[in-house]
Length: 199
View 1 (spheres, rainbow, N blue to C red):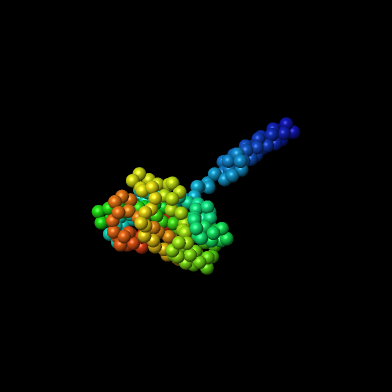
View 2 (view 1 turned 120 degrees about the vertical axis):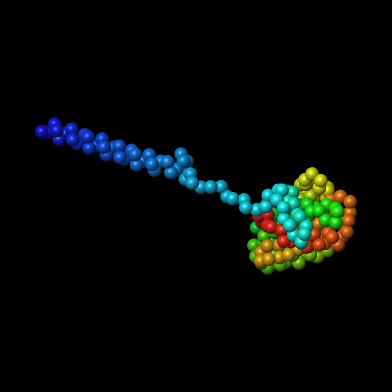
């Protein structure tokens, strides 16, 4: 009788061991060896991508290149750079777009600056709108371009807008033979409606 009871206890212990091991195996599959969960997905970049186009006021803008930075002081010049040295931004997204207008090709530079406060955004826009105050550096100025782009912006037209803590600065110039400045002015103003690049 004692032998039968002992065998029963051994069998019961074996069954419980299998249950514990099976449960532990399921828990182990929820984490990697470093202890991190495996269901985390990388952040989604839902901003415009090079090659994307936007039709605004009958003109097609094509995104050529874009870049994001966390510092504005390192990507500005003149009094605007001095402003950022005292009031650093929290985000900077810059892009270059091409546009066909009046039989010519234009390059459109867009800089989207996010400031830590709306009052600082207002101050930045007022300063950047002042002639001779400097600006946020466009990508061409820093040597970032694309096939067919000019080495730098020449005879550029300017436009800006501010919404809350965000300031958008646009410059447009002809990529090849110079055309009408009035057309560039329209392109710059219309480009303020281009989608954000993730600043």
